[in-house]
Image (cartoon, rainbow, N blue to C red; front, side):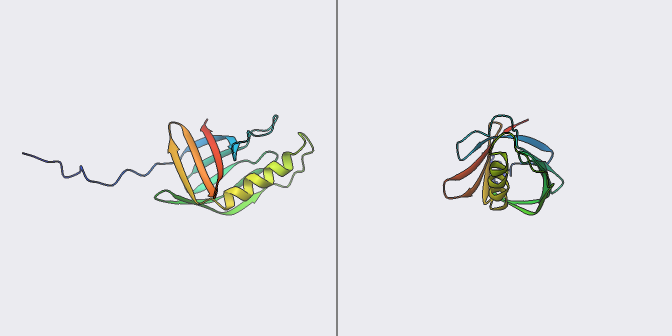
Amino acid sequence: MLLSACAGGTPEQPQLDNTSWNLTAINSSPPLAGTQPTLQFENGQASGNASCNSFGGQYEIQGDKIGFSELYQTEMFCTEPEGAMDQESAYLGMLSQAVTFELAGGVLTIVTGPGELLTFERQ
């Protein structure tokens, strides 16, 4: 009887490089109407729109662990829609505290703390 030498291998790490995402929920609450926070991954760099401002920085993945560093953003101030700046602050703050991620069925979930999640749909 022949057995495959690869049958007991480790599962393949999900790849995020060259993918783009739309934020669908911050802790199960949808983004404010009139905003569309995004997240793109390319060659170790993350970027996107945080609600009002563009942002960028570095990301690193090890297994199911993910971390963002050296995040920066443009410095516009948006008064519409009301709460956009608060949402932006929450979004970027949570990204900077990212711990793990899961990629399943076109949905990316980033865990930033106990019960704290960012949920995205693939663009």
